[in-house]
Amino acid sequence: MAEKLSIDLVFDKNWCDIPASVKLKCIGKMEFKERLSLRCTAKAERSLVDSQKINFLKGVFWGDSDDGAVQVQNASYWHVQNYDKTDSLYKVAQIWIDKSSKNGSIFQVSVDKIDSSFDEFLKHFTDRIVSKTKKRVRIRTNNPDSHILLERAVDKGIKAENLQFFRLMVISSEMKESEYDDSCKEWVCKMDPEVYLEEWEHEFSLAPYVNRK
Amino acid sequence: MSSTEQGTSSAAPAEPTTAPESAAAPEVPESFYYVHGKDKVVHKVSAGALQHSALIHGMISNLGYTEEQAKANPFPFENIDGDILQMVVDWCNQHKGKPTPPEDTNLPKQKEKLFDLVLAVNYLEIKELLTYCCKQVAMMVKGKSPEEIREIWMIPTDAEDEAAEKEAKKRAGKEAAGETAAAAGDAK
Image (cartoon, rainbow over all chains, first blue to last red; front, side, top):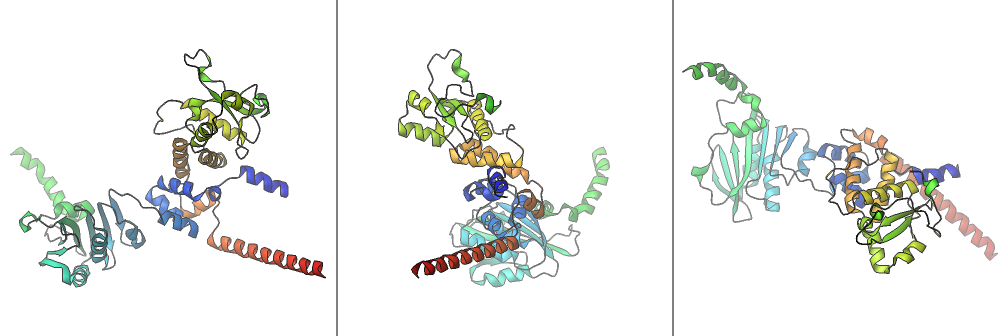
């Protein structure tokens, strides 16, 4: 038995024998999905994974992954589809305010049609509102150079009966209202192109006739 | 390359395992150093190749070893298996004075060897090789579920960990009680 133990010690090295500093390097080479899997294996691994930030260029999450949403704070663009709670907009905006996030940071979310995310956002930032319409809210941040703009997608072309789409952006405080992008098609399609599918199909079916002219 | 064929004791490193690349006819004479692992097989490595290891490089610079002294006293790495040290030496020789490629496909794929290599490379402070190894370790669990990762890397569950901890505490308590009883017996 003792002999076997000594053989194990010599040859049977494994993850648990690796120092934390090296484990962190290995985690640094993992993709997000593997990191999430590893953090579910044991408490010790969870705290190691959580101690490392992930540099996202783009992130996509589905509605039930609020655990992942908390971790993705430094992405320049990310979106959550079919989020089933009303807290995403003000929570992300608050993170951006706290972290003085850069202009150009974008977060998009699709929620249920009767969801009150927009109102929750207004309630949370009453004292920061710069301008407000049914479609947009602009709030101050702690950085005089940056504002946060919340936009609601309003477009008859959107065929999703049960969904509404929001875009949250860190913008320059000097941006004029005339510079706002009134078309939401592009950013909504980025999340869910299918909501415009019928329109696309229609355009596609007309294309040969248009070309003939 | 069999280590038994080329092995020598640390006191007599007459037949080094790795033939130096520059032994043919180097224009500038290169210094060589000697290392051995757990199996005492001595490996002759050029100073250029050893540059990869911050630990050995530091030892050479700080100790001011001459080649003669180095030959008589190979650097002992008793905590590293012979075959693992051989891999490390081969890698250092292959990448001597060359820019390191972004990928290294020659690393071992077997779990045990890879973790042994990771430990050795970390100890020897070979930054680039450690980066490759860590990437290889990460690749082992690509697309795997938590259960699969736990199985591949033999990670104990929290419950198993707690049970082991309790067991260890119990054992430590018993040992302490035994020691106290023995001390009391001595006092009598």
